[in-house]
Amino acid sequence: MEAKDIILKAIQRRSSENPISNVELADLCRTYGFNLSTERVREEIRLMRKDGVLILSVSKTGGGYYMSRSMDDYLKFRNTNLLPRVIDIQDTMKLMDYAAKQEYKMDAQARLF
Picture (spheres, rainbow, N blue to C red):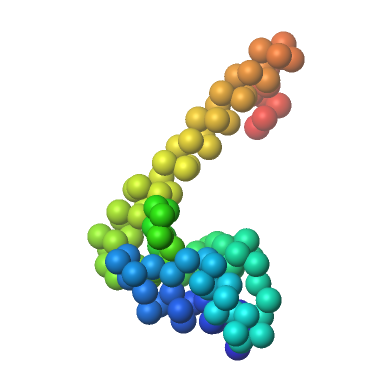
C-alpha cells in the first residue's frame, strides 16, 4: 500500500458535507508510516486528478477533499473552482504577452508560437 492509496481511501468516505483536510490526510498517512507534508498530500491529489480520479474540494474554512457523487457535483466544482483559475491564467498570459511586446518593441506573438 502506498500513501496515495491511504489518501484515496480516506477521501472516498467523505462527501461535500464532511470533507477531509490535507492536515487530517497527512496525519492519517503518518499513522501508516508515511511522513507526508500537507504540500505533498496536495501534490498526490493533483496527480490523482490528472489520472482522472474525481476528487473535489471545498476551499472555505473547515473545507477539504471529498469524492464526486454525481455529474452535478463534478460540474459545480468544475465551474466554480477549475474554470475561474483557467480563465485567470489565460487572461494573465494575454496581458503579459502584450506587456512583453510593448517592453521589447518586437512582435512577441511571433516568437511565442
